[in-house]
Image (cartoon, rainbow, N blue to C red; front, side, top):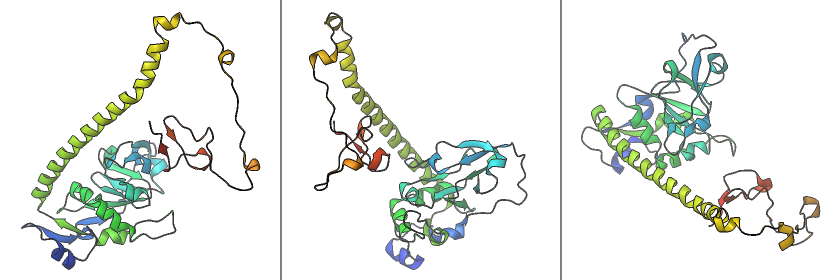
Length: 279
């Protein structure tokens, strides 16, 4: 759903009875301040959430870290149990790195400065906010409000503050959240089963080769040095200094060939341009 004013949204889609369009900033606190009385021992274990800790597929904090309070109390974003973390920087924002803070040590946490924090008010649940802001249409709309230079663009807080969100009664929010959670759990089980089958399929060629070369028959085969039955040669060593004057063409080096996929980035460094080998 695109970001529009409340009047346009009401005309665009009628809500069920008892629902209403509200501004997200009216029902949730954006980037709440750290309590002035927050006082912990410097060595107190504290939950820390860097950006890589958020699973963009499931939208959960999958790999939280535990650090001494002294390491995180300054220079990081503060949040509390039940807050919604919204990645504001590209491409993390579009990739879905948004999660609800759950299971925090002593109910508080710190994380990347690239998170906006949304704290639900009494009229809305964290699950309702979380599911709404992770919609592809909302994330796409957020890109139109990016600020900053290319490669370091961020969603400003005023986008979330002014975002219109449909608000049902609390009981309805919780009922819908339970249904959505059950459906997503079923999807996740199916995804895990598919990945298991894929891993099994990928391992079959190696298993067949082991079966052949580890068989009783193979144990009786004569063995010779590879050089005795074939010619071993090396190709032309390509370097930047030996590049052709005309008709430039890209070429692969050993750094580009990974286990089961081709890394097509320059120099063999891993990037999002990685391409899987066709079987």
